[in-house]
Amino acid sequence: KETDIPRLYTPNMYNAVSAVGSLLTAMTALAMAFLVSQAISFFFIPSRSMDPTLQVGDVLLVDKISPRIFKNQKPGDIVLFSPPKELRDIVAANGGKLTSRDLFVKRIAGQGGDMISVNKQGNVWINGQPAPGRRDLCQAEPLRLIEKYIQPKTDETVPSGDFFLMGDCSSVSIDSRVWGPLESSDIVGKPILRLWPLARFGTLPSLQPLTTATETWTD
Image 1 (cartoon, rainbow, N blue to C red):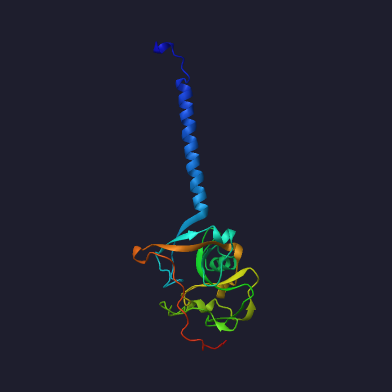
Image 2: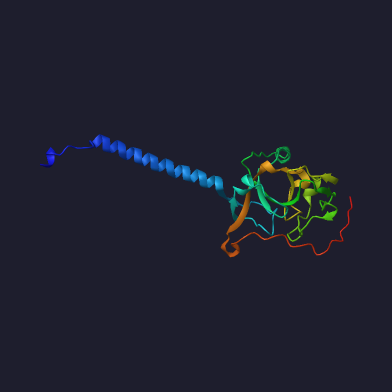
């Protein structure tokens, strides 16, 4: 008879096994989500500092592994970074507040060992040459408010392992011209793909090259 067959699991045991299985499944899903979040993330462009390359509302897919492991960033790369102390101090002085969880995006213009000069208008020379790429293809800020933050520099050397960052729209970008070089440890990711809007889906373009190199230094 069926009643004579011994039961291997009581109802309570079955419920316990089911609960443990559900818990393990949930923990596995959470662990996978955590690992994925450490490898990639999404970033929403909130300002015009990288215009026209990156426009307000663009959504980027960010690689968070290669900058941490391979540390292969180079001039021309767009990077995502935590704000350095100097930038946090500037924001605090204007009534705001930043933490290391607030992220920014700029393009690397110079690296450790490069000689940087910045005049009071915010123009940059690297190793005696104008900073590579055109940064005047965006709508200029008429009052040029950025100029009040700029401290002119002449032939200052970027420390080894640090980077000099600039926005693609120089007239509105608060960048290394204001708060100085960025330590490589502050770089947390590298945008690799624009996901939105769909009309501009794809990899991120380089800066357009300078049309002339005749610009001369004026302080």
